[in-house]
Figure: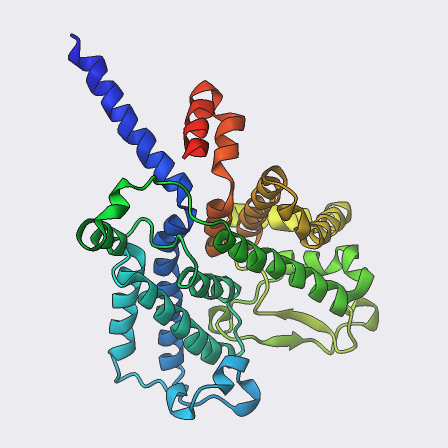
Amino acid sequence: MISRPTNTNHYMERINNIIIRLFNNPLSVLRFALPWLVAKVIYDQLNIIYYNSYDHVPAFSKTWFLHLMPDSWLSFGPESKFLFILLVVCAVGAALGIAGRLCLLILAFLEFLVGGTFESLGIFDHNSSLSSQVLLILALVPGTMRISVDYFVYKHFINKKLVKKPNGPPPKWGLNLILIVLVLTYFTAGVSKIRHGGIKWLDGATLGFYLENYVADYASGEQQLLIANDAINSGEHWKDNIGFEAHTYGNYQYRTGFKKLANWVAERPAWVIAISVITILFEFTWFIVFINSKYRNIYLIAAFITHTMIGVLMGLYFLHYRIICLCLLDWNLMLKTFGGKYGKRLAARVQSL
């Protein structure tokens, strides 16, 4: 009868220690989650490049990174399996932390290389553009390998003095560097909207267009196609002089119910205007994340909800962004705010380390 509560307390203590360790090492959590997603993106990109027999990158299509690479590195042949093997090895190594920093560097390099080649096909992957930069940062900043096979081996077999050190959080500058890259990605998206659409972007026409149009008839949207109709009356033209109708970067939502919801929103001008204004305000108020943890959490939760709604309405779920946002939250503050008495006690323990 006495052993039950003792065992319960023991298990609760172990669970608490795991939670504390995770909260103190968000970059390690991010390091475990992100490589699998980036590797899947690279794998899909390689398959499309192979499928299109794309054996060179035109000079005018090269990204800044591809301009630094020799031309011989920009040829991908279907007979070569080396990249696929390297991809699997690096994804496993980066996630588990086995030669973790090296694997992260290689994965980031592969996405810069393959993703840049993929972009020259006319397809820009927003997910991997951010996550590849985050992988590069994770490979270089402290705190990335605190929960890893590498750290376990180093702590228990090479430098045993580390065992006696407290398991407090690593320096915050690594996390803040990733946070800067994330919020500046949002800010540049806002600048791009105003730069190309002007204040007129806020009238909701652009957003409504993306919500309603979907052109899957041409290779399932794998290649960008601009589609115009010269039979359209000039009064019906969409912000252009050529009768622009649609293109393959439109709505990718396949589920009928969600598609109907997107059309329902698009048919209500007040809604799309409100969403457009909120979007710009969100993208231009990125600086609040550096005021304090409360505003940081509000902004990141708003970003998570935004990407979730984009997924529901347009089929673009931005999973990479949502995972990055979750890992950058101040979970200690979340515990204090929403965790009740247990959360406050646990948060106090996290903060005391």
